[in-house]
Length: 132
Image (cartoon, rainbow, N blue to C red; front, side, top):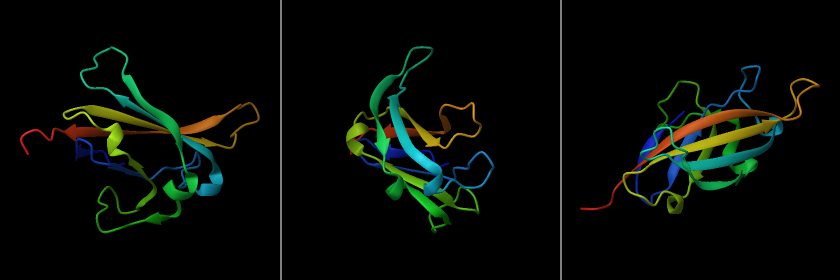
């Protein structure tokens, strides 16, 4: 998982190796939909975070069926199968801390499951543009 820092208003890239319940990397065919909830958690201590964005991500453009291992990836030696870009318009407060929660909805694991998802969480910190 790649957490990171960006300048306020700059688009943030989130990458991760997301496994299925069997431990293998998720593929496009495994996923029914991907939901993103982005929260501003700056200064939150037991108080509800402020929801900044809630919506769905495109499976075809965010999930890879083969692991990606570009030169700038240093989280592990396996690579990643998920990459998303969080718009800088949503990250407009300098010095803020954001939490991106992704929910990968997949086929039911057992007959009793009504809906199953795999969660993924990333932290994004924005650095103020003041004084630049």
